[in-house]
Length: 418
Figure (cartoon, rainbow, N blue to C red):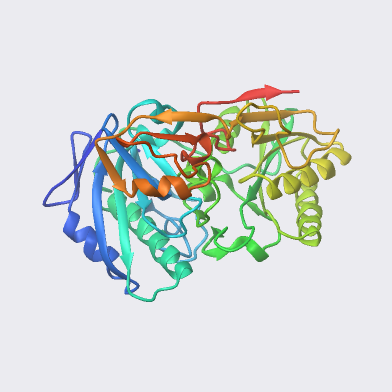
């Protein structure tokens, strides 16, 4: 791991005393190798800046493989070799943020300072902000694809360019075994991926998970970018690619492995549209979890409303199998907190981690710089006509802030509920 404490543009992409210098023109040429894009802009946003980023599409942490085990973002940037093995370079404290008009109503805001900065982890990263304009006539889904790949390519380029720099820290992770025989409780992670409808897409090894059956993953595969975000769910609980790379559930289970529990691994499942699809995935996911011989499961999801049913259905199946289960979710009970928090529920659900009320209303002051379009606040989920005041301050729900109520728990709000 390399610690990044500053970022700027220079004649060569390199690290100098924890500052990442980026060759802007070289990176532009790499991104514009995609013929679907006609231009690209690269800007910088640093912690403490009076800067507002919007609309934010995705956030990606720069990483690259430096020893064995394929390439990061398999199926998208690299080949399709299974990842999760060997060595990976991480640029901690740095992020690539993709912005611009793609879909419009379900993208987000990142404030680099002020009260809004307290609700997003990306106000504390040194951000390379990437916006790209598509060629004339390009369909929206192709524009999204090109921007998604541009973000991943930029992140891989930054890490690869400094891979010969001596690391600040080396961390080791071992893939969970079939059983340690330690007598500790075995715990698995059921990882629900957003896949509900047009542009609600998550990619596993480059494949849209809409039609997948649940599958087993080594946790280290996730760290190498096996899961990439391509969706447009509300910004507050969108699992950006950065969230997947730094999944706190996986990190915590690794930390406790061999001490308080045995980490049995990760089962990935999708969030479906129809009842039949939901039932098929929940039956299959519960079968895989059962085969791991676990006593406990943690479930996280992405999104709200329809995904609540996927979460509840999986909880019910696992509970009926005698497996103790905890769910992580945010809430949408209205600004006053008086309405039902979830679109589905079950009396069996007795262990919940809340990551906050996404309907909470906040007022955010004007920023000196906006990248790229302040007026879009009014069309984002969580904004409304009149959200933008004269002078540039805004009044919105937390729903518009990227990562504010992240349902992996990668945020600053949360509480256990029983």
